[in-house]
Amino acid sequence: MNLDLDTAAAEWLAAKAVEADAVKRRRKIEDHILSLLGVPDTLEGTANSETDGGYKIKLVGRLNRKVNPDLVQEIAAENGLEEHLPNLFRWKPEINAAAWKAAPSSVTATLAGAITTTPGRPSFAIEKDD
Image 1 (tube, one colour):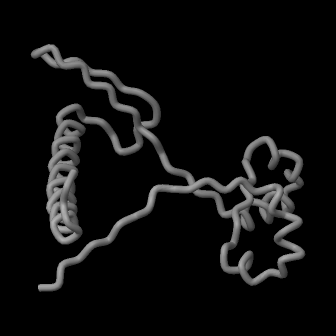
Image 2 (cartoon, rainbow, N blue to C red):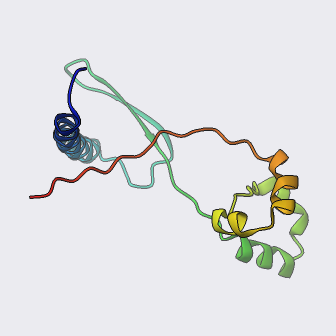
């Protein structure tokens, strides 16, 4: 690809617009298919369907669950269920980036051996001044 930076930025904006339109259209079609099949919002697991025209449609429904860790620990303690927590829940430590950066290097250097860092894909935001 041999584009100057302005042309590349303009092409990126155009591609993002096409991508957003395609995603919007695909989701609208998916919602229509769900209504045609009568699939409930609460589908969890797999549902398969075949059309008269030979299309096989596989739907995988997921329910997102978020746990309030403080509340679940409080409820477990009140009901004597603490021993069940390690089996029923995963406890995932995450770095508090601001606190990590502010902590003394003697602390972070010691704990750094327990952390694996890998590069992620950069995110882009490009705007054109009108």
